[in-house]
Amino acid sequence: MTRTPFVAGNWKMFKTVGEAEMFISGLLPRVSSSEGVDVAICVPFTDLQAMVDSTRGSRVQVFAQNMHEAATGAFTGEVSAPMLADLDVHGVVLGHSERRQYFNETDRALAEKVPAALEAGLVPILCVGETEAEREEGAMERKLRHQVQEDLENVPVERLHEVVIAYEPIWAIGTGKVATPEQAQEACAFVRALVAGIDADAAGAIRIQYGGSVKADNAAELLALPDIDGALVGGASLEPASFAAIVEAARA
Image (cartoon, rainbow, N blue to C red; front, side, top):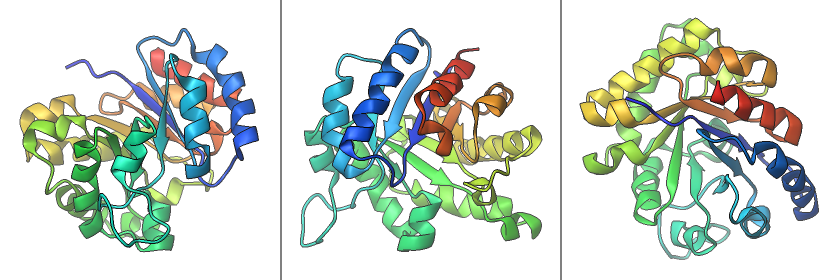
């Protein structure tokens, strides 16, 4: 099955509105002809409206980096899926390792967040991945099985293919370490097999990104692997030229 590659840049807690506007003015001309690749920037809440307005009519989609599972409620400081959809945001990153590590994001919450995003018309990028200790202990498959099965538990089978899964080995995020092509393919193929355990058709259609120190000079090799359908890019997404180079690598 042909799956459209999807390259998303996760800005994390970087860029004021002014800095974001400078970035997007440099990115749009570079990716305007990048047909055959879906492109997104995952930006801080304060940048969402400006980036939605500045990317209208372009190939670049705008994603948020988190959301609450409830549509409304007494949750000071939180933002809901309907609020994001009302801004014309296209999707949302859920379960990033930094959210899990620093803000106690749980698989139980993600089991509610993923279907809530879909219900609001947002594309969820569900992040999964193991720590270095878990990999060294041979627990990579156990960790991924737990995350994928629990986080997707409440997603209707007929909508499962709409979810994007980002495999991010935690030991490779922001460290400069990159999984070898063999490690990345093995993990992403295992994630696809887990989805196949829920629904075979969804497994063939669902897109699985690799994330973890993806850069212009290693993107082509990773993106050519059979079970990797794109990348969730961190630091290299903060500069238009380097991010555009990764998008271009996904076209090859």
